[in-house]
Image (cartoon, rainbow, N blue to C red):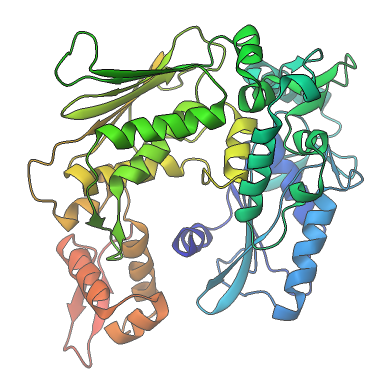
Length: 472
């Protein structure tokens, strides 16, 4: 995560990133950015860096107060309305402490101290007096997110599984350093905090949402409200017309996650590899987690088509109903993250199953190379389909990790390149200390940068310097 945040800072402020120094404490303008991201496409708020992309850091004596003030104000309806559950995470970059959070696009329109803010490339803008624009945003949000449909007659006590709510409470608590706010809430309060129990301010209708039913509903309740909450897991190796094994899963999304992961693990080979930081990883497990989460979080949840996970001898295919945007093949160059069910997606992040929006695409790509030496195929059509090669026909070359799908440098290479830009006579030992990597990893990555034409060495090893030939 340290590399990701550092790269985000290096890219500077944009429509999805706000940098704040917070030298003397939490700035009130932070909540205008929170409001903007909620009302538009979401984004990162990073405290301890300035708009010149410089990492300033947060004073240690202010750390806990800033984190507490931030969480408290996000739950203060006088500051953010409707209130949200959000907290700042601590990370150290170049020896300096940074605080960051990721705000998801909301299904509602939020206000900051009574004003409506939106985000564009120039920053946060107050549109409180622009009624047509607010109406347009409101209609867009209502049209897109079926997960927020309210079911007033679903009983929290009788129709939901409280063992699953307790499981979610414990998972969320294990995902944070301190006690999670859900631990001190009743089940109804937890549902409201997670956006799974809502009030329609136009009609007065209130109750558990479709997302709440799909996550915590009893099986008979789910089948009555949304019979399309189902996934067909198939294993086809000998019998290609039908299947060798099958698990047709019609249940809540939490149990569905576990059963799909188990099915993939049962019928695919585990293969360990070294990632770009020379760490031992299981690419199969990472890909299984990400494609299952994609199936659960980003399906068109009211579409009549059944989501499917199909395992063949040479490939794994995952497909689910989709409101497509591209209508074709996706690559990192043309891929734009979009939360089809932001409330469900945020819930999975809160319990520690999922990471930030868009990370799954990159993780599947990178780990596919690690697993088979070949890239996955993403198809954005009426059925969103991911095809992952399972057979490893050739020895994997580390060069395949460069420019994922011929796009940008990976995080490690980017980090080293930026260090060389900042100090062109830096030694490999200094790089190792600054980046927290072994000398062997530094040497390997520098050799890769040289081979791909990003840098060259001018002069001797002791008195020379690194010349930057091109930027990423």
